[in-house]
Length: 434
Image (cartoon, rainbow, N blue to C red; front, side, top):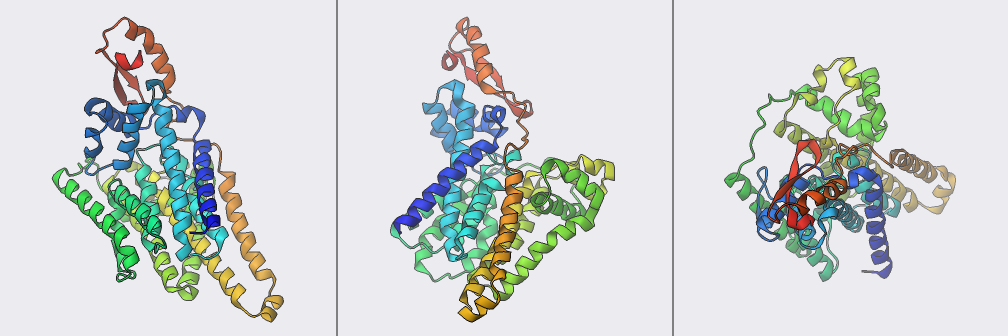
């Protein structure tokens, strides 16, 4: 791998990790989200760092979050547990952004498009809401990254082994990686891909075995109707790419389905451009992105039904305060990638024409570049800081400080409950707090 490629890849990873940290509000960084505390940290405390790595939860394994929780419990002082989990999630997002930048080289030749596709890992408008900066939903970013890994043909032995490790750990973290199985039909005889794909298949097989042995329970809510799934897909995956988070409800209440469909049109045009003028791998990528965006959102809502996703049955007043689901984050990244993929194709075609033709049409590349710049502007407008479901705490460090005096009067084996989000808590022994 060229030194320049290595430098750019590492730089993108570092900047993405830093951007992820900035997008998480200060209070949220010190606040544990959901399974980060009650399951991952608690299991590492209760069963030990090693034994907790292979515990299933909600029907599948969560290997990467459990590794970070195990390292946190083993090496980080208790007052910094929340910050450690947040930092670990941001660092993981940065690593995946760098992997995506590297792996998009087979699909997109225009470097700015590759950089932006990788940056979507941390720049997507709704990603801080529940996905960015926590380990509980890191699996969503794993799915997004795995798509590009399976499209890539490793050039070096070191790169192949690194991606093999990621493919195994990734599939042992995200069971929805099974949706990417059709990508294995792309160039199945290419031996350079076999190692990564074997690790992917092994991880998927283990996850499916686990979910059969320890199945995921149903929440008991009635299913969400197809009109609401379709409407919800548009609201959560399409609209956030054009409208700031705080204005989405008002925009949907005003424009309804017609507005949502109108905002979908650019992505349909990008899909058409790619299928008509793209290379074989670009067409495969476009189909995977378009189909994947619809499948990921739909299956997520089908598996986790709730009345808050019944968008088709909501009045205009209810739509103004609608619930935005994290299930639209990865689909929005996939749709946005279609625009960048199409832009790269147009740029490549224009650069391939003869010099005389280029002189007659000098503004076409500039138009595409301005359109991409506009997209960047839309992403940056929603950059820092975004509202998250843990923006109001409860913070971890103040609770630890308040419990020190109590623990000084109690036995080391005495356990105290430390609050986290959604009324969950973590039980910690006083010997750790002291």
